[in-house]
Image (cartoon, rainbow, N blue to C red; front, side, top):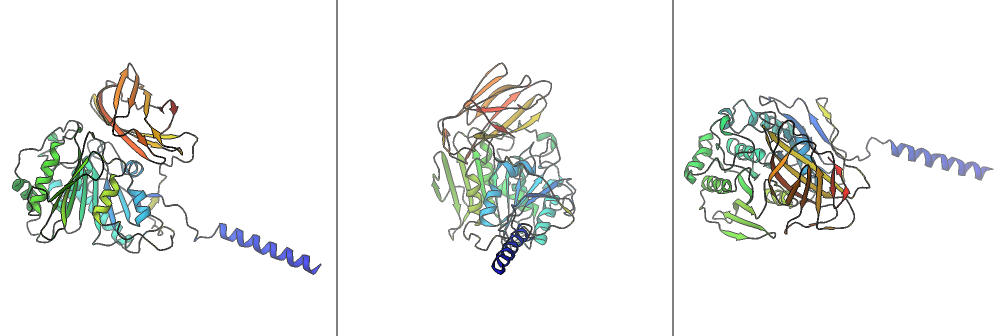
Length: 440
């Protein structure tokens, strides 16, 4: 009898221990994207989301990641690899959302070109300051990255606040002070708005934004596709002029290599051998950057891959009452072998769209065809990273020679430009090689 009672007591104790473990407040939970509602002065009327990984470093680096026109912070979070890299290396990512002119960041107003101007750059600096203070961030490791409109703002933030940002990565951008006014900024039709200035003129634009600044200028990484019909590939050369001149470097690269098939990287190093400017040409790519794998090159350029976090993962730091968690796209477990994200950028009677295919199956996809049906009268006029045919409302997009394979868990992108009348409603369903995909 005594033995039975002892066994029963032991079993009860074990069960109680298990129940306590299940509800323990110290249990590690998955990191999520959260929205910060009161982050400081916000003259640009921007929204702020932040991603703090479970294995965040004690004094983490801060990466400001800015979306293209028509996008948002949460969409850039779910369509790029920066959060995944944050999980690996322990830095924090800020995802702002623009509010002006088709959700583009203000790169055109007079206020956007001066330090402290009452528009988007001041709001973005408030976000950076909030993250540094709230999470004890490292002020010597603050970086900016962006795509299209976000790339244009990356150029601006590094020019306006060079003592804050140590480096930046601009995907499909234009030089700082490119647009003289709002009328010159037309989303979707900015083919080659900023060409013809000398390197000295572009460099002076940056220096004149901070005439009293005499410290080191941020390092800059630049990316562009040769088939970009939204922001011309020629803008890459103008950005190179600007930032090599700022750093006092020749426009002749100190080295050139091919880190991936179809990629050409030009490096511009100073006398000590430090690469201050890096420029990537992506052969055949359209207005779809960053594509799979490119974010890792940006994070490496920032110097954030050298020391991987080794501490035991902890719960994300407790947020203050001004931080309201938001639900982020999950795309959870599904029987479908694919997930497709469709992001349009619409203006009067015209639009561009970016389509991201993610292989959620367990085997590689070798050769892909994506099909969908337009709900309206949309007509595609040109495309990049895919061969697209259309018959009535039926559309077929096929891989091109350099992107036929999608590994398990991997993604690829393609995009197109089109016209429409009425309402540009997005397709409700896509299929990959005949199989319906989860559509975001």
